[in-house]
Image (cartoon, rainbow, N blue to C red; front, top):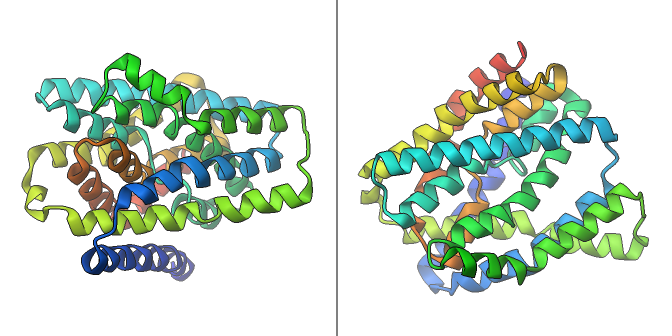
Length: 305
């Protein structure tokens, strides 16, 4: 229990520090956060994708199980969020915001240290592969959903086609599938630049929290979206694992990782393409705080999968 609390502290304190600094930066300097969104989407993310995929060493069978789960679970979460939004008559910007926070979890900078604690190095390796697929999805499907807040479907697809992240993902997958090593100088360069992604995104979360109207926390849309992330997503993840017949360590890791709080990447996408930015920022903040209480239950549940 002491180690559990220690890991949570080592994860939460850096996150809190980055958010506080972003909050203060927004308060005293009032920067244009769209510039940071551009840097994270068009510079940092492509470097992170290429460096992560090129270094992945997971075997093809395990990769296939993880990829299949990720695709099916993503579809179910998207369908559930869309259905709930239509049922409760969400506006289009709020619906896109809930779709993002329901589909995408904070599986990287928060999820990976947690997996190392709960499942050891084997679980951590599985988690890294899921994170790679998550990064590709959030910067393709996530970009499409976010841009739909301001553009037609055709325009949103066009935005995707002009996004370097898609081509970075293609290059990374080619390197992974054909086991093509990058020159060490290039690999180190991509890792150096991509390593800044988490810090920039966390700073942006703090900036969004400063700009958010906290009276909006009383909105029913926000709490419906939070329930979808905390309750709906774990149930859908369990259903997906059951339907696909995935068991053992892979099932446990995927279940915990998909049940993490809402992804901070959603803040970047809403900032860049417009939409219900307050709903996303408050959702990420509240689900992150709530995760300290509900994740132990999720981890306990995962051991029986």
